Each structure stands twice: as structure tokens, then as C-alpha cells.
Length: 349
Image (tube, rainbow, N blue to C red; front, side, top):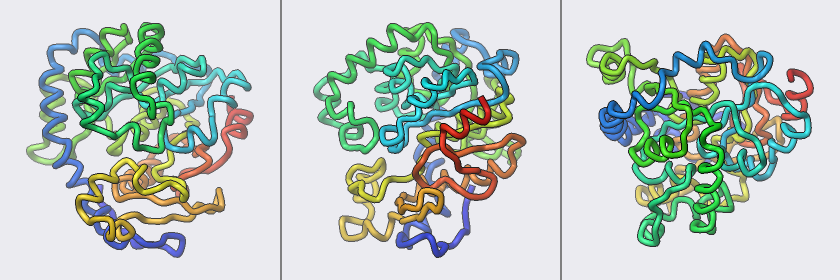
């Protein structure tokens, strides 16, 4: 997807960032497309270790027609949505991104479904516990300890041991919608922990266009293709409504941005942005957005702004209702209704 949207009165700065938003679809395909296809080709050998995502259509998950999606944006630690979910003994469907899975398990909640998508060779497996993590790997990549996501990852070795233990203990109870784009490390770890696998293909381009790699991938493995909106959080939301048929879907931890007091260095794509524009150019890339529901400013980068605009387009076309219960970030407007997680649970559980 591309966007021609111009900044509104509630958006400040980031002139260069706005230009990049319009190219994010193309840039994302260039950055991840080849790796995703390489992973999908290798994962052909593992497809018999699971079932097709289509099988979930016949698998009732959670009571009623509501679902709560738990993603791992920075609001997760500030708002702690699992507290309300546990206090109200929510019986509906709980879906997590892989990045929020450790958060759920630490709090005694085994989600009904977990989603993973990103093809990165070494990073994503950390959410499942990386049996091969060593000092050399830690020195080569500061991704986790630098970010304003899960503070426990500041002590990476200790946290990795904890996550390894959590997944070894609970893996057999976890269903996972495992994208064929997932890395070898993720797939092997998922299999080793005994998770129940449901395979799917992410849409890497328009499958109706001539020469589509998505259509070719689907022909080769016969698996359903899902428009994930470029990120695992949107994929989880899509699974809730389009696959599981839930009619009221709440999203939490779906910030698509950062709290205004977060240093640039603690953002996901900081190193890449710094390499492109240098320290002096950071304000031309990061965009500040006023959230009228929270009455606070947040800021974001071109990738997250693209995710946000893609999500709003997809929500407008969805045949189910979307409620943002994140309590922060920049996802609001259009077909997305903002409310507190407590309100959603009281109204729809």
C-alpha cells in the first residue's frame, strides 16, 4: 500500500518521513521479500509438522464473538492490559503476537493463538527463547536491549533463560499461526517446544497482478494467503476477524509509535534512520502525532506510520468491529473506535 496523505493540524515535523511513508511498501518488499521467499522454500520441508491455517476456521477459540489482541508496543508495560483481562476472567479469544507471548505466559495466561511473521534470521526467535544465544550474538546486535519495549530484555542472558523455560513448559499448550516466511531458527524452536502449528503465507505483493510472487507461493504450497498489513500486530487482528470470525476485536499494545518522552535511540529503526540522515536529520524523519482520545502527543517513524495507515484502510473494509484499547500511540480514527480495555471487557465479554 502507498499513501498520499498530507500532514494534518495534529501532526508535526517529519517532512522527509512523510515522503518515505509513500514508499514504504516498495522499501519493505525490497528489504524482506527475498528473505521471506527463501524461508518459505526451506519451510516446505516442515509443513507436515503442522496443519493449514484453514483448519482454524473449524476450531472454536474462546467463548462468544469477541477477541482481544495483545501486541508488544510500548504501552504494554505502561497500561498492563493483562491485569484487566485476568481480573474480569475474560473468556473470549486471546490472540498475541509472538513478541507479547512471554508477557502473557509470565502473567499466567496461555493465549488461544499466537502469530509470527517476521523473516529475520536471528531476532524473532528470542521471543521463544534462543537456545543458541551467546556473547558473540549479543555483541553483534543491540536490538533488544536498546528498545523501549520489554525492559526485562536489558538483562538479555537472564531473560533468555526465563523465556526458554516458559516456552519449554507451556509450548505444548500454545497454538501458533506460523507464517511460511518465518526463519529456520523460529521454526525449529516452535517444533521443539511442541506448539500446535497452523501454516499460512503472508501477502508479499498483489496476488492478482501478473507475475505475483504471492500467487506463485500459494500455488506451490497450497496454503492460505493473509494480508498482514506488513506487521505481526495487524496480522493478529486480521486472524481474529477474517479467520476466526470474531465480530468485536479489541487491540492492545498496538501503538504504531512511541511516547513523547522516549529517546530516539530507543526506537526500533533508530540505527537505520541514523545511517540515512545522521543525528542532525532525525527530526526530519520522525513525525509527531496528537492523539485526541489520550490528549497527548506521540511520535512515529515512516514504517509505523505506514502500518497505521494500512491498518485504517483495512479496518474500513473489514466486516467486523475494531476497538483500540491500547491507551496510547497513534492508531485512531475512521472505523477504529477507541476505548479503555476495561470498558471493552465489561461490554463484550
